Image (tube, rainbow, N blue to C red; front, side):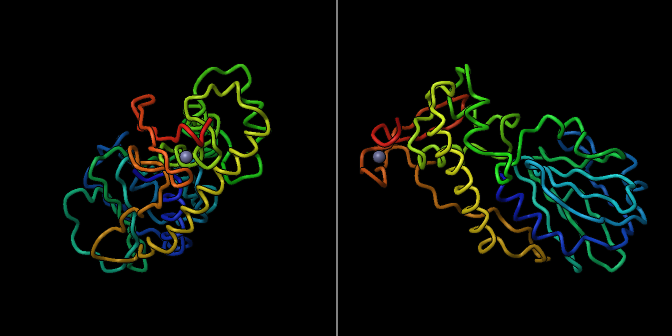
Length: 273
Ligand SMILES: [Zn+2]
């Protein structure tokens, strides 16, 4: 599943190819994504251009020039974007194309169809899917003090707490596991019982984990202009996730695997308290 680092890398990969170009047409072959693609997306985009592109949580937001509106893209469970000027005829799972006047096309592929393509004429940050999102983990609004303040009197486990997008966006299951290991915090610990000092460590761990993944993505997931196939998600170097039953890299003890909210949690009973 694409998490924040993949979305960030995708955004970097496609931005250059789509900005400040006139949009010729929009082709929709299957509108049935997580929410239906609006029927008037074609007329909304035709003859417009994208002025800027940014990420908010796991949404890619493309603003049209002259404040004509914005497009919101979410990659869901398996969505992929690529930009190319010599694409072959679309095959199965290639649900939509945005075609530019210079011959380039932004193409969306999604096997599981949990992604989204939506539009708004208003401020996209006030969109119902965006407005309740917590701060970006890589922004200066996110730090230990913030997590500490938000967590007081909360009894939910710390892993669920940091994965709640109203608290902070973009900390998916894999990165929550990794960041908690790095900070030495047990994923089941009640979030309200963690000290300010430990939250300082945790906020740094989240930032480091995400930044490392973005950096790795920049090197392994480079080709967004490959006409043959959409780029895959990058392989992550993981210390605990998917390593239940293997040795802890710090103390060699066997890593424990449990389920939390039906998601895999792996931790070291010796290093994480
Ligand atoms: Zn250990």
